[in-house]
Image (cartoon, rainbow, N blue to C red):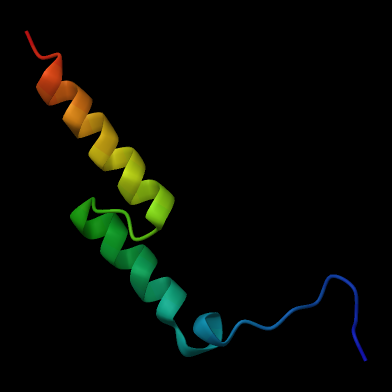
Length: 51
């Protein structure tokens, strides 16, 4: 039986999500694919257009 609005995440239950968040905050390196692409893209643009 499915209850609307209620879901279970095994990663969250094991603490993986919190560990990834703490790592990202301490190092400044994003752990998501979109965040990593955004950070790399901005650093490449900075290198190309730096005056």
